[in-house]
Amino acid sequence: MGLYDEIICNVSLPGCPDGLLFQTKDFDNCLEIYKITETGKLLKEISEMEVVPEEERPYYNKPEWNDPKLSGFFRIFGSLRKNSLGWKETNFTGEITMYTSRDDEWYEYKLLFVKGKLREVTKVKETT
Image (cartoon, rainbow, N blue to C red; front, side, top):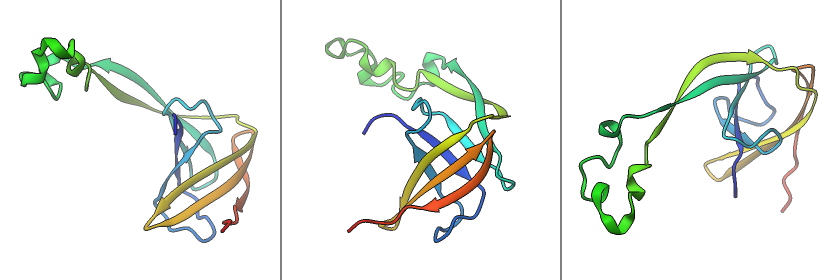
């Protein structure tokens, strides 16, 4: 398993329903979000993390919050919140593989980008 990045793809892909969210391990694998626009530009979300006040965290005022046997373990849940600051164009050149599934159907594609612009899409053949 491990970390990955997500891709919102707004271009039509052969043999794939629209609106699916894809994953890739071909960037930094930091749970970042990328978007391919309708015109094929690759964008990266710009965001910042914010510390969530304790009273807004999911286990605040619940028995787990102050349980000494858990050493404050439940205090960290929900302690950070991601705030989107918008999108910036990338200048990425290279090939990525992105994949997802829906209703037991696997979708995998190789995408070639040149200076942040989608140049080629290849559907990866399923092996059985």
